Amino acid sequence: MTVRKPLVLLTAGISLVLATGGPARAGTEFGDGNVSGKKDGDTLAAVAKITYTSSGNNKGGGSVASVDTNWTPPACWYAPEWKATEFQEYRQRLYFGARHDPDAPRDVLGDMSDQNQAYAKDGYNIDKEKEGMWWGAQQNPNAPMADQFKCDREPFWVENGETPDVPQAIDPETLAGLAYEQIKVPGTKVSLAPDGPSKVNLPTWAWLDKGDFQPVSVTASLDVPGLHIEATTTAKPTALSIKPGTEDAVRIPASGKCELNEDGSIGEPYAKGKAKQEPPCGVTYQRSSGNGTFNLQATATWDITWTGTGGTGGDLPDGEYGNDQPVTVEEVQSVNR
Picture 1 (tube, rainbow, N blue to C red):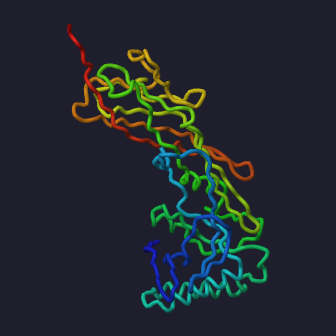
Picture 2: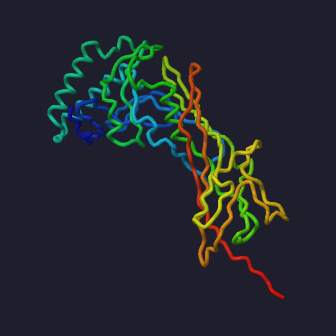
Picture 3: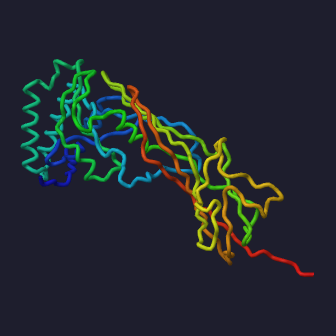
């Protein structure tokens, strides 16, 4: 099957995305709220919006990146979009706008006309207004465009309370993957000691306090007539990996991976008198940084799981997030008398 690029039509005040070979529909909106009709001039769209709520500290941080390069959040899915009357008006306006666009492909217009006639045979199910909703494809705006439009099934009717037997129909696991994408974890700027520049061949202690390293969760929910599903995706810190920024250094431990302590902290704060002791987490530099600095990288690993409606749940790929910080390393100065 030949896949053609989506065509964006801006006509008669209507903003449309036509995926030739698939359904013609307006783009998905993300944010708070439920299904609603929206008019903006001559624009009409009704979308089942996914609501996100989060908990935890993300100060100085950012989004986790999956360690599994083969896994990505959902690019598209099918979800309740329109009440029957909304769907009728949406389809009619969609076709009207396309007809008055001189750049609209004729074959697309023909397909749209045939689709509308098929929907009209059943009166767009307006007599079942309170019994169900029309479902359609929704896209993740963060996904590659080609992947977003792989959900090319025409809109279909679903009775309230029913779960459509359609691949990629929205479910708790879909929401869990979308929640993963919304997770923001705190930064990993570590405390280093002794104070001031590090010294060649003397251990540099590194640690994160308990309060800086706590679980973070995001709940994604969809609530429309006849359907409520949600999933909470939780990221729990498990370890911190240290890269000294130079090959002339020894990591402590040798793996460079500092495990999480029972109280949720990483490493151990430096105390006076421990300058020559080996810390549980840190690095020993073997040469000075000269007039510059070494770029120490501290990357946290997060174990990610999810729980959802109906007792569903499972594991998602671990995530990583890290920060860099400059470290000045000096030669130890000795005084001869």
